[in-house]
Length: 223
Image (tube, rainbow, N blue to C red):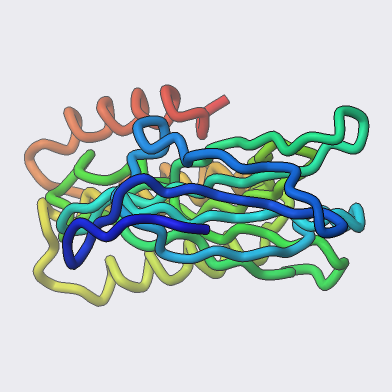
């Protein structure tokens, strides 16, 4: 990997060169516009889907106060003997934690749903439902519902934050929205609504519940 520094935070003309058996099989510029490139935060080589063929993961930072992170993942295709790539956008903040949650040799990307940023609060007050992704043969798959214990723990933490915090941003709407999304990932949407409607008694509750239901439908939590 090579690049030219242009500031303390950013660089330009990033180029990736890959060798197999001592021979160069890939030597191209990183598509900076497509990935929102400011700088490379990290580069990893690891087998993401247990197919005995390691992927190359570029952690791309776009620049800004807290935005944004993308992964550019290169995969070798034995049929064409070429590397192909996908871009996955993680949004505000750091990228995901890469963990093998169920100890099966395949790794998961543990992160949050960035679509909740700013939706019901400022960025500082925003809260997010848990998301867990898997990489499989060149595609990113949302596997959140396959990990109910992790989602349950996350929902519990959000509920505890809401019930224990006296001074909420925007009345705690962002916390409740993320909590309810987690509950839908657990197929417990009805119980989630009961709890949310019970605790949120602000004057805008009718408008909030309408907007929240619409948003959860648009983002796929309500199916």
